[in-house]
Image (cartoon, rainbow, N blue to C red; front, side, top):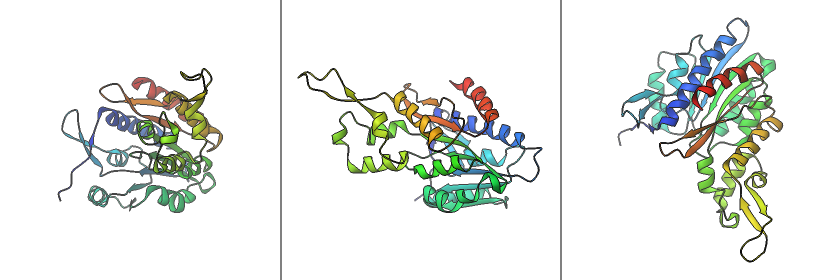
Length: 273
């Protein structure tokens, strides 16, 4: 079976532009600091090339853009479950000896192998792009990134997938698989407190019930979780990424320990809001 590149919408093209712009600002900020190792980590990296739904032509994915960042990163970690995608990525990276490509479960590799090696006291710093296709990332990876005190993180918060598979208007009808996936992504069941509220006005029969909260309420609860539980000091208002019908596909979160990082990303986000 021939390999086909992923087709991506305009929201994905904008995300790639944003991450690329920040990457250059990130490495520039460390340019004069000697002794630091600057890493780029791309979970769910894809093949390195996509096809634009808008133009029909090929566009560079996040790994290709990271590799051309100037000033350069010192090392790169690309992770994807799809063997065909990582095989193509290896061809793209053939001339780079500072690239590690991992085929397998991103959460497992991040939490068990890679993130324990990236800490502030180890003189390592990393820009991480956590871009799952849906609810395919474990909270532990995000928490370890925050507690490392050494990582700036972009995160795809897949609100459309959440609404489709876990956060339904009738919470008692949600299948166990959807609840389990939501628990792994959120880290526990506290997402229910953000997703639902008691309907004090009651239903047609006068009895109280449960109402589903807005996407914004869920997003804000997760933003607080990144600060208070994961330990990121700065988590700006995330950027809603919309499709051609103006529906929000996901929110692009950014989190960091540095106030200058927030200033940079606020300026970038402002151009795309």
